[in-house]
Image (tube, rainbow, N blue to C red; front, side):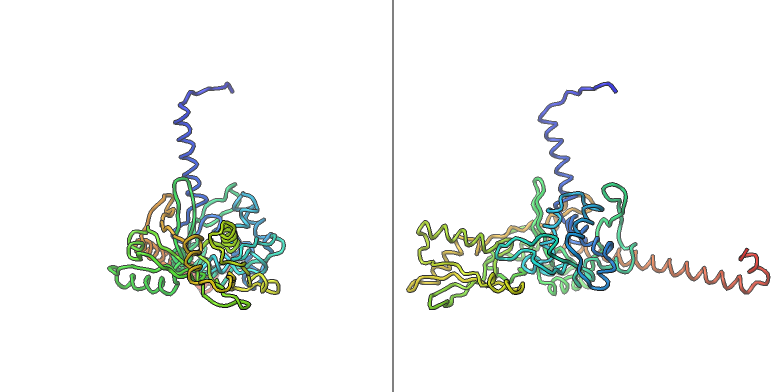
Length: 398
């Protein structure tokens, strides 16, 4: 084949290449789908647990994380094992997921900032929430979702999972694509479900929901109505820091941290502030959680900032709120990938689309179950007719 050289403008070619890459990243890697609230790799992980480890999931047995990662990488997601393993972490940790879709044994990292253990040392399985609420109607019928070929056309995988609850609002989402940043905070599951039911009963319902951090942090500044009505906005979230005593010293007891904030980062910042003599009142930070977790992983967090005697703990606390991520501003942007296109929703639009999604799922599921029942009925009617017709049964058996 002879070589063909095409002259193009390098700026135009760069823009075209970046546009194609941006579309691919947004669609296939970074943005969640509003129907199940999952990014592609998260969906593949949950589907593989349900499909490829069905026997273990039915028996409520865990499997090695390495086995799950290997299966997903081989059949559905041909990326590095480290990135696939890292995608399990936000689905299973109590401080990252409001309702974890995966239960685990072993260390998947801590809120203190410790890294997760190696894949060969940890085990996972679908949680009750993951099985009943996210896998959802797939448990009843494989026709409840759309299917597509995997990356090399050797297997099929779901385009979306037929979730039965608005998982995007319950667990939230975070993703960065080229020129797009999605961040949806988690919300109280009861409030989300109550609002959804009310919206079904009365489509004119005004939807206003308040974020609910999975760790239990305090929201100190927000325009909830604006965020709900536009799907965009900002709010401030603050760690719970109580004034107490520790070993006869005044201290600050930290029991929660804002999303994506770890104690190790707070500790580094505090040490720098002490070195620069900005907060000389601090003696040390003691992480009680790390001591407790030597025996067992706890779904709690407790750390102490020990202060010098005679100082004002309230002043130090307010200063740390100002100068560290103990108080953090969260930007909300409900931009999702819907039917292959990036779409911005407000809360009501999202819930309306989810209600319509559920209506279609139930209609499809029960239509297929009805068709299967009709087919079985017709077959049995044919058998009865053959048995009742003299001489015909012999011909049928031939």
